[in-house]
Amino acid sequence: MNLSSIAHEHLPLRKVLMHRPGVELQRVNEHTLRYFNFAAVPDIDGYMLEFDALAEAIGTMGTEVVLLGEVLKDDHEAQAYIANRANMVFTRDLAIVSPKGAVLAGMAIDGRKGEPEMVGRVCGRLGVPVLGRLEPDGMLEGGGVTFFRGDTVIVGKCKRTNSAGLDHFASLMWQAGLKRMVTIPCPPWDFHIDGFLVFIDHDLAIVDPKGMQIGPAVIKNLETGEQREQMMMDFLNDEDVEMIHVTESDGWAAVNFVMTGPRQIVGYEWAENVMNEVAKRGGTAIGVRGNELRKGNGGPHCMTCPLERVRIRN
Image (tube, rainbow, N blue to C red; front, top):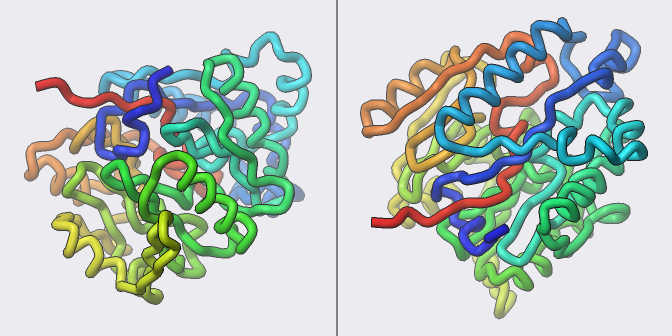
């Protein structure tokens, strides 16, 4: 698998890892909601219909959906493990694929610890090298990470990260050839930065300004170790990134779109304002139902782990 373009977040998404849940959803009940971090017990049939519609929408955008369960279907140990892990659907959190291989994340909640190793097994089947592992000491999840223009990685500092995770990840990103790491303080109401910042082109992002203004970001040169501080909105302005702003009226997870190509996005159908703004800028947006999916406290971006991106040929 060609990983050379994976750090260019705006490039077309050729392959993405998703997980179609199965019996593990039966583990979610009123007594286990906190353990699995679900907001409510989902209707399983409705959940599956919505997941299938999401995967289909991503496929119609030209991205190949690789299903984790299919890759590991003959791995009986993995299947037995997954059968007890209701959060495996949120594959974004479990790994960050870099130009030099996958970094297996460090999970914060007890109901998810160990899940990244399942993605490690997938990587072994797909020929993706594993650059490093953050568990057991490091905490940092993939939903809190995004790449930017090939040389920069942006990371959210939140209640699901710790110093060990951030430091180890910075070292791994330097090994992967990245030049800068931008660390943003996250608001207490967001688990990850994909709740308030998602790039959908090299010069266009969906943002929730409230989440960007908690405090200054730390911009670190990974080669020299030099650091400076700057508010994230100012950083994006300096980088000539236009921002589509969302507010509470846009609905829950209105930022949490997955980009399949420049200005080609899939998200929850109630975020109509975002989709209209993308259309005005020459893009295409697909909205899917998420009444049951949202009960897992995640959006379409959370359910997609990018595996491969490709450069556009003129």
